[in-house]
Length: 73
Image 1 (cartoon, rainbow, N blue to C red):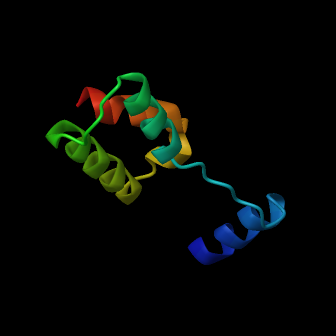
Image 2 (cartoon, rainbow, N blue to C red):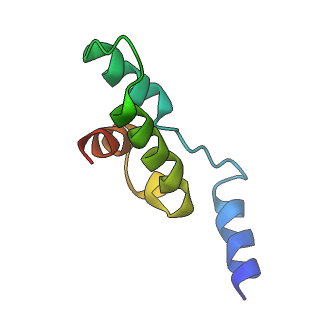
Image 3 (tube, rainbow, N blue to C red):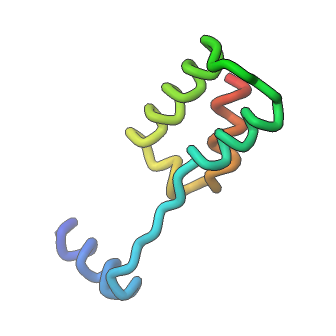
């Protein structure tokens, strides 16, 4: 039944599903903070963004919010 529902969902979307990634926003925020070298908090935030793909966050929130949340955490 799930596969059938996925088929109908993709059919309604005309088989076009675009997910925007938070990496571009994240890099822009880092540039705005004027971080010249990638310190440990930047690497930790990058890892949090990578881990966010194991959930449906990229479908529920805009990419800039995910990037800001990763920097905050």
